[in-house]
Length: 199
Ligand SMILES: Cc1cc2nc3c(=O)[nH]c(=O)nc-3n(C[C@H](O)[C@H](O)[C@H](O)COP(=O)(O)O)c2cc1C
Image (tube, rainbow, N blue to C red; front, side):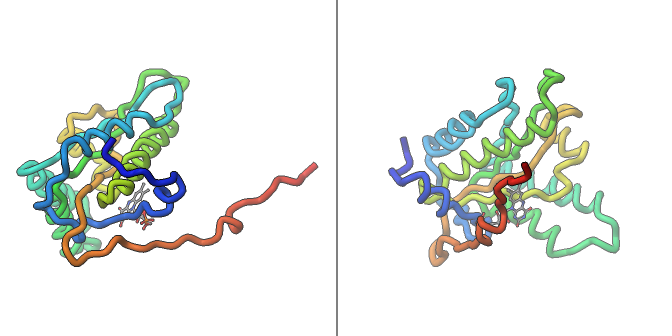
């Protein structure tokens, strides 16, 4: 085990989104830690044992290839009146700012009893396992979901089938010098629960 021992509550509450701009691309992530993230992803719950999560991992020079593909797809799929130079710049730059980027994919199973939504939910559980594992190790992570991921071209780029989906990009990296672990907040849980009382 790579991660230090924290309580589950500490890990959940300290997990944060760390954007690539805050990461040091030259600080290597030990392969044992990457393996631990992926192994923990693999222990997500899954209806019917379909295990639909797939991760396509980009490191070193392949990150630039990913950035270029994202820019190409943004140019192609964005209407002129919505085109933003800062967005396309970021799509190209983000993969280079993180030492490792994983395409988060859902491989659609062939069991018709399992709805696609449940396969997507299982992948989200797998990503949360990775994100919590990263947080426990002090490693930053960011789930990014630009709409261009859900395109035929992106599926082809990632060698996915028509029924599979790319659900996001998962950037991981250590904070660069001078950056602090981000803070976040949530509205009270009491606003989000109700006890059923219709008799
Ligand atoms: C499915 C999913 C997709 C997300 N996509 C984006 C995204 O495209 N851009 C972004 O800035 N943040 C994205 N986020 C991260 C959220 O912005 C982040 O979780 C939120 O700001 C709360 O911050 P925290 O994770 O540090 O608590 C995504 C999160 C999830 C779960």
